[in-house]
Picture 1: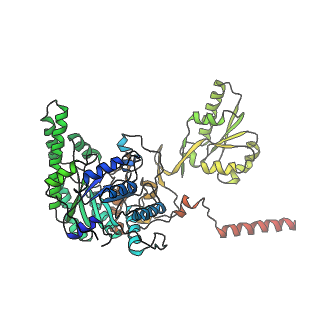
Picture 2: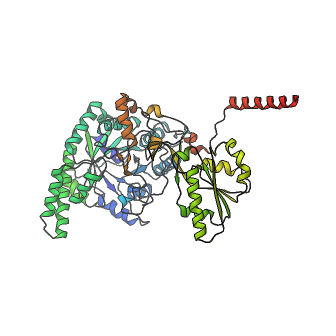
Picture 3: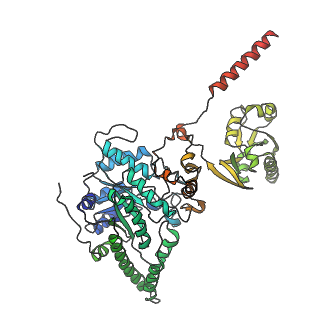
Length: 326
Length: 238
């Protein structure tokens, strides 16, 4: 075992892995994290704890991950390259490992101008760091774990043992470079990959065919991403504005129908769309898992953690495997 | 070249309003080409300041002049006596010129009349674009001649990230994704497979992160010293 994390154990056992996502609050209150951790606990093998996603200040990924771990939910701490240089990153990695965290997902991070897609003030005037990029960060984690060395070469008496993750946007632009993009992350040392949300399953499958030809699915565990849709509007927004996400018209149509079935009743329209969204997510989870080369799913129910239980159960992925503690 | 852009006149007025003899001092190389700080622009700023001074009832003389370059002493040494007649020099050179002159004007302050924007090129008349960040360690041979340090919003060395959207950067629909351009360019050059190589973490000490940088050419300095000695000994003979 590289890290001994629950996620690593599930993947090693050959069963499809399920990861979810927990977004820390814009507040110093730990209860939000505790509440969400308890909603997710038991329905996923690990949950990503986002690192100031959409470039908005929140409880740090490491702190929220430590809280989640205390609640019995295995966290995947996220680390973006946006906010720290390699000194701060490695210091945080040592600290995170000392706190008992075992999974780390390396990301470039949303640009500081993002400010929750303009919905919040954020900090668009911040200086970004990008001392290293995702590939290089993956390499740093691997060097720390496998060679007990810092990036600069100094020895580590006790190495942080992380199960190393990276993200992948299979349908990103330019699409023909994306397999090479994955190859680099795998060569850098990514043990697992979580993909950007998949709606266009045919396009995803054609990308996975290339990945299988390259043999990458055997060198890393690919978890296909599913973003649970909440409304027709959200699907349209993701299709038009979220990089690397294209939503087939038929799916938007299904959500539209659910919305229209409620007539003028706004509350009912929301309920019907949410129900359809969960149904859609279950189908996507199954389609992703049926894709050869895929080892699990990463289900993102953004600010809707309570949706995970139903999706995981309906997709036949419950109960989650457990392993005797060492 | 260095691209500059004009500062709002209100900001300039805020800097100069308490001085009485102001020289707007232009630079006729880079910043003249980009219409920010050459003699023509220095004249315009001087006119605007005179108008503002009279509107606000301030007693102020504002003149303008210019030299070819602010970044080499030989250009402004001949006008140094003129410069010393003023109690403020508003330089419309780039930041290099402002610094360089400021180190040489004794008690007279030198203030910036423009913003120094970037190292760039003239894409089309009136359109200037940043193409180099002066990071001190050029890797353009690895990226199809397109610089990810200057042109990628995240200075990624192993791009693209997941934010590329229809060839544009996640920051704005008006910004080309540098990595999209790199991929397309390298396809054309037939060198795309080179991108599979992982570029290691950079040594940023050649960039601004290593502190102010200096390039010293020993052979040129040695030659100059020799020439100086020659002149001195020739002078001695006379």
